[in-house]
Image (cartoon, rainbow, N blue to C red; front, side):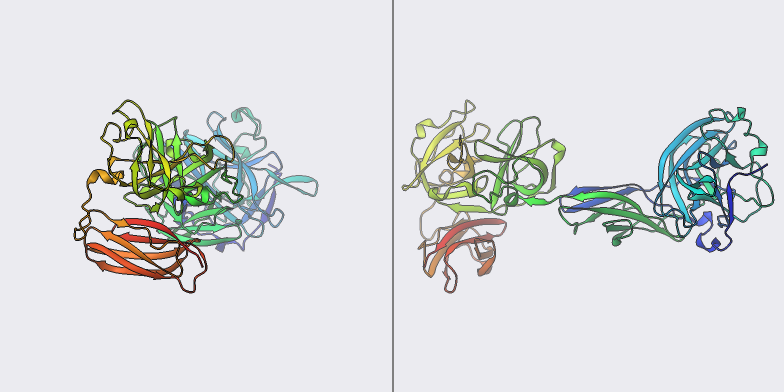
Length: 597
């Protein structure tokens, strides 16, 4: 028989590969996804039961079929009824004729009937230009195995040599004694019934003194309890890599077997690159399996609602972004209508198409679209799955303001206003009937208060005296610019401080944590800050500038319950807005002050 392929001796490369019995298989199904603290790389790992091999895994020769032909191996699986075809390994080499990844088609035939069972179209194999490569763990998809199966590899990368076109990189063969009726040269891989083809016979088996066995191994899962020698090597660890290309990879982590995920907390934001994972075992390290990934910018709520040109429209309007923040309100609707806050920013988290069960203090990671309705900036998640709760019991700053302070920058934030009173209590809503508006005043200014029927505020007797008001800054404004229509939305009955009763005796122990407005304000260069704490606890009072940079720590330690005062000297500081933040145990309040020289 005349073999039309090109045969090249290659006796010097046998040291490049270990035997099949010590192959370390790579992970499968590598994926990367964005999570709240970076990028999470995950993978699967499973090994077939057994390997069937008719070669010794030592590369010795190269077999290059002519274009539109294929090389294959027939495996006798008659003793393994119920087995499934899982993976193949094969060795290939281009002899320096083809650089970079190359393409193959894998054809699987029932050798008894000659009918093709399945095909892997355009398998991308690694670079085998300068040295041979063992392509490990090519998945076959758990196809039911016939009694005799043929696995044929067709090279799709074509190189002209002399007067013929050859498929490269070519399959490699070993240096063991040839096993007759196992290795096949398929003259026409499009043949639908091999048994009827004149070339399909025992004479089509590669034979003669110059031939060897292809290095092609078949992995199967056994379905009938019979056992073969398990040639797999169980991994000890998995190594995770990151890089801009396959040749520019740096290892960024390693996890023990059993943990099939890794979180890259240093993932470069707003960038595209590759992640790759390899398995390490006693036999060595497998090839890397990579996946392309683009890591988005992850915003704080403050960053998500930035309005750099001050036109009262968020710069990211209509963009799909990732945001991290803390829920600072109950659900104000039967569907999804919360407020979310982080840094010096707040916004509405809403979608009327589904319900998400969230709690105040939930730290959430949201993929959503930035929108604006009636002047209020909103984040619209596309589904319930787009909101991930990653921790509970968190707190947000309650910013102490006056009515006159309420403006666009505080939209969506939790604020408090001291000594307000209700101007029209007769408009307070009846329980369960409707939501309503009333007006509150701090003597100097007035502001609307929205009383939502989805809270416990409707139907109560409103406070008759002045009280401390806590609530969310909301907005309803029509037209542009949307620089008006702000109001306060209290969340619970306890947000109306006057309903709890206040003991004004100077020696009374405070019933609540309270940070007062500094006096004088504006000031130059000193001012006094008063606060009250209800129990002995840790207290920290810190001053920040308008950029959020720490200026001075005024108090840091345990203090007894009661009323306290501290003086702040701003000598040497520039004129402008400053914030002072008081932490008392798990409670936090923030107020604004103005240094005016």
